[in-house]
Image (tube, one colour):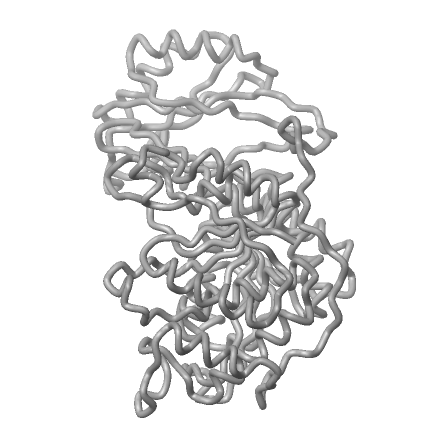
Length: 483
C-alpha cells in the first residue's frame, strides 16, 4: 500500500523522518511517495503551495501524510493547509485528546482522565474565506453553512461515535444568536440523531461548552462543531492534555484523507534535532487505523505510551529532573519499546482489517444538494448602502424609491435597528442595511429587486444585497436587534 508524504517546513522534515523510521522499524507495510508541498514550493511560484505532480500523486493515492507547513506572509496567498483540506473536500477534522501518562497537566495531577474527540466541520464557515471591504471602514465576511455540508460532517461524527462506543455526542453551537446558520447546523444534528437512538445526543452553546470543558472535561466524549467554533474548541482541548505537541489531526473525506500535525513549523529550532514528534506520530497512528492496519497501530501506540510512562521526553515537556532527549533519541526509545505495553491505558491487540486507500477517480465535480420540499418565495431584499447621513434622512430618501411593490421596513446599522425606532446612543458606521419587504406579502421577482436596486443607486452606493426568501411562509432571514 502506497501513501503520499509531504515532510513540511521548519521542523517538519525532522519529525517526519523520526515517524517514518519508527514505522519502518515496526515493519508497517506501507510505501512512501514523497511530494513537494509547503513554503518552499510557494517560493518557486506555485500559488497553491503544491506542484502539479504532487496534486496528481495525492489524488491517485488517496492518502496524504504531512508535516507542519508554513504559508508565506504578505504575499496574498491562501494557507496551504486550508487549501489542501478544501480542495479535496476533507469535510471532517477529527482530533482526539487523551490523557498521556508522562505528560503532566492540571487534570492528570488531579487524577481526572480526559478522552475527548472533537469533530470540526472542515470546509465551510470561516474556511469559505470570502471577504470584502464594503466601505473604507466596514469589512464583511460571508459565513456559509449548508445543509449537505452539515449532514456530511454530522453523520461522520455519529458513525464514528457509534464505532468507538461513545456514551455521549454533543453539538456545540451559537444558535441562540446565529439562528439561521448555526440553527441549520443544529437542526441537522438532531435530524441525524434520530438514526442513532443508542447514543445520548445533546447540545451546548459554545461559550458554555468552553467553560464546561475547562471545569469538567471528563463529562464530554464526542463533540461536533462548525468550523470556527471547532477550531477554537479543539485548540482549547489540546491545552487540556499538554498542548498541540500531543494533538493528532485527521482530515476525513470520501475520497482523500489527510493526516497531519497541526502545531507550527517552529523555525527557531528547525535543524537542531530537538523537536517533539509525538503529535505527528499520533496522527500517523490514526492513519494506520484508518487504513485497517490495527495491529501495527496498537503496537506503535503502546510503545509510545510506554516510552512516555518511562519519563522519556524532549525538551518541551516532561520531568525536568530527567535529562531531555533529542528527536532521534526519542524515536529510538519508541523503537526499543516496540512490543511493550504501558501500565495505564494500554491499547488492545486487534487484527488488521482488510482495507484499501485506492481512490475512486472522478471525472466531474459532485453536486451536493438536498431535495427542496417547500415552495420558495422572494418577499423582499436587504440593500447594504454606504452613507454617513443620519437614519431619518436615509429612510426618507429610500421611501421615494419603494414604488408600488415595496415597503421600507427598517434601517439597521451593524445589525441594530436605528429606524423607525432606535436610540441616539447607538454609535453608527458608514454602512447601513435598508430592508424592503413586499407590500401585502406578495411574491416578488428578481427583476423587481433589480429595478429597486437601479432606482436606489441614484442616491447611494450599494455595497451588497441579499434576497429575503420564504419557504412555505417561514421567513428565512434574521431580524435586526431591536426590530
